[in-house]
Image (cartoon, rainbow over all chains, first blue to last red):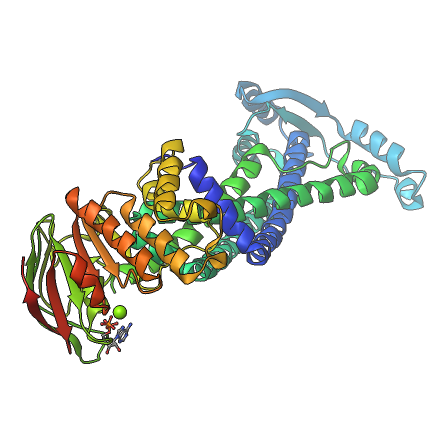
Length: 302
Length: 221
Ligand SMILES: Nc1ncnc2c1ncn2[C@@H]1O[C@H](COP(=O)(O)OP(=O)(O)O)[C@@H](O)[C@H]1O
Ligand SMILES: [Mg+2]
């Protein structure tokens, strides 16, 4: 039997037409649920982009002990050079560092100009090759170099990075839990709508059964009806999230750019759009199957 | 072909409305089921057209023991049975002709021949002018004839009719009886429940009578 035969589609649309309000209510509820979910996805996508852009700027700074011995210094440089994940190495002497520091702050702070000694150490700035493992490479290498003799400390914004990473993990978990709750809610709504739709046409379905209609024949239009509810809800939500996205870009892109350094505020990624729509289909199928099966089993147990 | 053995039936927890029903219908036979109102005629027919299940006894339909037949086989069996329901059960959102075509559509036939055939049947029962009418706009007798056309369109092996002439005048009544006889000549087993004994005169058929849920045979053929 062809699932999308003209007959089934005609039946589906005539069912929807005779239950317009119920159908719209279900689409609206799904729409709201998907929109809320979509907004969280939007937040997630953009924070993720922001994070990876920071990631690109991360460099490892190795501060040296003032009293470092020459052999130790050689040994450290050898470690740098033998690591193929390190792209470039800059040595910044304590005098250079002090100069540039003063250059930056002297106009703003009397305190800095009033200092008459140099508190800064010698340092190396290491850039790492880009790639998915970049952060991990930096982390691993910093662990290794930290304990070398003559290394005073290492720095790569570690605290901020791990804090942000933790937040992203939290956000991921939050979206997951929240998504599961909304998912169940949507299934419940669709199954109830389909249940009402079934009971409003109970006589018709009973008659069809007596005339020899198979379960499949009765179920297909109900499944299509459920799928339409889920998919319409998700598509409308994608449109509304797009509008939210455009609104934010229109009003805030200027200020966002200055904060996020040239990053553009992004819409949902293709995989997310795809999974939102698939979720619409899945809640539609599950919701309507639950009610259809419940009804058909009741029917035959008579 | 159709066999009832010690069949009893009750609605829910209620009393038995059918008791110790025993009969056998040969293929191509013609039967009347009579009895006063409330005797259990409709209930017996419900068992035959596989709407209800007996509370005891054995029913065999087309060689299938209904107690052990799996659910998924029921649709195919039901398609071999044409039913004229006492209260018609027409679908209000479909025209007369679409109502008649329904059994074939369900089976997956959906071409112009189906509509053509449905139209012919409606003409035959005197409804040539009402092909596109909605059931709500039809009289009781007209609805009855639409219901009969729907019951016969699938060329069923068994035709079950519950008071099929209750709402028509005697002339149309005998015309419909003639249709049932034609179907019977083509090999369909016919069972007609009626409390109208005048119908029995013109047709050569076996007559079963129900009284308080018990069956007796007035004439066998
Ligand atoms: N759906 C039902 N639920 C409970 N009792 C019913 C139902 N249908 C019929 N009955 C009862 O079963 C008995 C037989 O009814 P029915 O088969 O309709 O008789 P008939 O068709 O001969 O008039 C009656 O006592 C009637 O009240
Ligand atoms: Mg009756």
